[in-house]
Length: 304
Image (cartoon, rainbow, N blue to C red; front, top):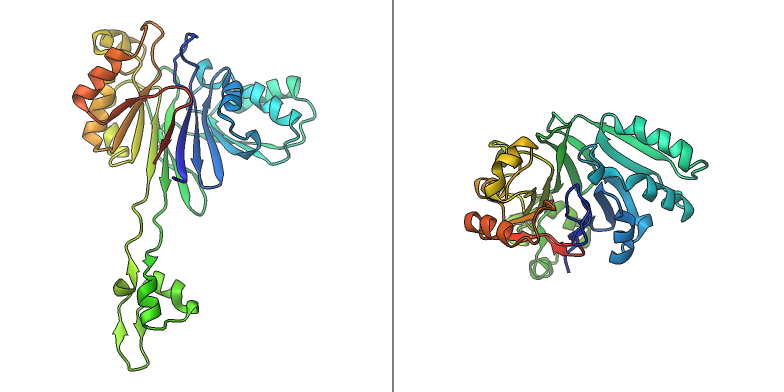
């Protein structure tokens, strides 16, 4: 079972529908949960997905449009009622801190946990979060308000030890980390055994890029090149590309073009306009350009 998963909580756009919820996702990596966007109703979707509220360590907000952040104050309040004590980190464009602080003071007086705000410059591609195994990098996007995507990148791991070779050369356990880090082993007879013979290549680092909301950017593929999975908004069909241009959104064709140019392993599309009764045409247009395309749906879980 994968230890790097994407949970889709909502993949609709601004207008509410009975088919889709506003934007929100959970990135699950090993023992940590990260939320991307928090549209209205997100905490209900968390309940439906049986994801633990208290395990969410950070929230990443792409931009200050309601369908991406209206659920935040309600979730913060619920965390307080559940007795949360661990800090909650919020990474968001400049301005959300001021707006949310006013709401917190009014609706969430007496919170017993700390909310730590991190202002994100949406014009820069830079690492905004890092731990021992993972980095999160901001991806500049172009929308009607300051907006950025997020690139979750697994750090390269050390090579895997070949247990058969370790046993064959009677190498002590105390030397295993040294060998993983590139040291050779010298036998009692003076024979040098290179570490390449004692190890197997490490697993390929995995990555996930979230790009919503944005108009089509011709150079976006350079930032998301080769990612394991790309989520790119596909608000409109190609027949409505003029509307997409007007509102700084993308078509399914354009989302697929980014995936093709970037050479990603898989494309996931979402943020569907409420004007369509289903996503049949959206997914068809994307697959014509990039066959390894899937249409996001609520409660879907993707293993990377």
